[in-house]
Length: 190
Image (tube, rainbow, N blue to C red; front, side, top):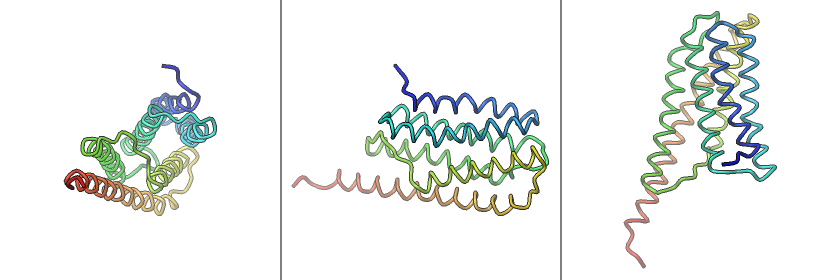
């Protein structure tokens, strides 16, 4: 299978994630922040390239979601568990993981119920990813150059709030889509 440019950019994000985690785990926060920012930029770039060059594929869409989940989940785990000046709180890491597991379960359930294989992320879901990237970047920068952790308190709560809102949004979406599909299946032919 030949990979288009957009998919290659997404794969670069998958490859950068372990390098980023390794740098952060060994307290190489300056390297980690650079790798994380580059990986975060690939998230915007792959979508722009896919739209501009008409390179949208199902494989690319699935890899994009997996790359996002892998990068952000890895970031929250390493910044929660590895001692540093500024750490991600356990409760926020649990929220992020719970939302990601919820999304995977929702996609699976929707596939089982409706047979749908294409799942577009919601605007709130995209905003959540962006806020999580900003939060992780700030934590890394705080550790790398000694930024004051003060702004992290409000950014932490914003990240937690939008993560919960997005998870609830996906639950509402699956409930509606499943109910609509079930209603269609139960209706007698006319």
